Amino acid sequence: MPPCRARRPPRRLNVTALISRAAVEPLAPVLATLTALQARHGEDSLQGLAPGLVRPAGPAAEGWVPAAELDVDDLLGAAARRWSAQPHAAAALAWKCYSYWVALPAVLGFAAARRVPLMTPDHVLVRYTDHRPFLTLALRSPVTAVLATDPIVATDAPGLLIVSDEAELLDVLRRSVADAHLAPLLEELHKRVRIGRRTLWGSVASGVAYGLSRAADSLPGPILDTAHRLLTALDADDLVELANRPGGGLDIQRKTCCLAFTLPTPKVCTSCCIRSH
Image (cartoon, rainbow, N blue to C red):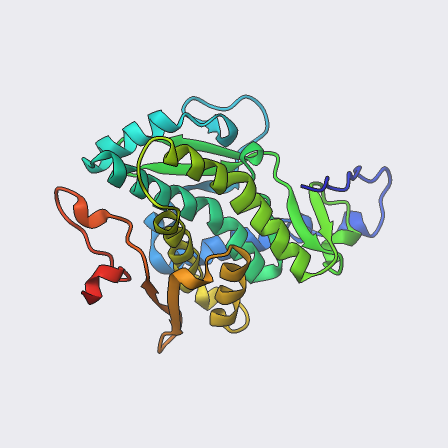
């Protein structure tokens, strides 16, 4: 991951110092989109993200662990208790939940304002339990990738990674969400349960599409085009079928299953591939 460009606070009053705090907060558009999503769909719609998304720097509070130090066996044990699931189903459901919340801030940041918080394990804190809500994520010392043309580049906002164009921004998103974070976790799951990459990555694809669909009212441009761009960047565009939904949002049809139908109380998601069989 290329290093962010270090910035120092201004030493004297200037035009930049007169800009409002919200205007120079790199994550402001991400937080605004998340807030709008929650207002439309209810408080539980953001239960997997900490309020305000960012936790202050310093020692992690009780229950929070850096994603880079995640105990995968403990996570899977909590998932098995949470859903009363067999190991392969617990892994699939834990992954579905984890990957959705890891990807959501970056996906909505790109779609809303072309600002992408880096979701690498060193910037993410995790808290999980064996009851609902199973998982909550937060950012620490966030770094946000922005376009060189973004007005925030002219300010003294800290934690910026400046990229040249949207192609590079999507590449940064892929490397931080997929290569640095989700791919290593997937390999750890493979060491413990027999479950295919395609099955797990199908949950990433449906999660990206679902997050965009729920936030569609707050996002600019054709949401279907944005979804395909993001899924292509994540090598997941072939794992879901998407169409514009009358009235807004997306119709989503998965090509893989999250295995929720194997639970003691079976659940078949509305987008699941087994509904058509």
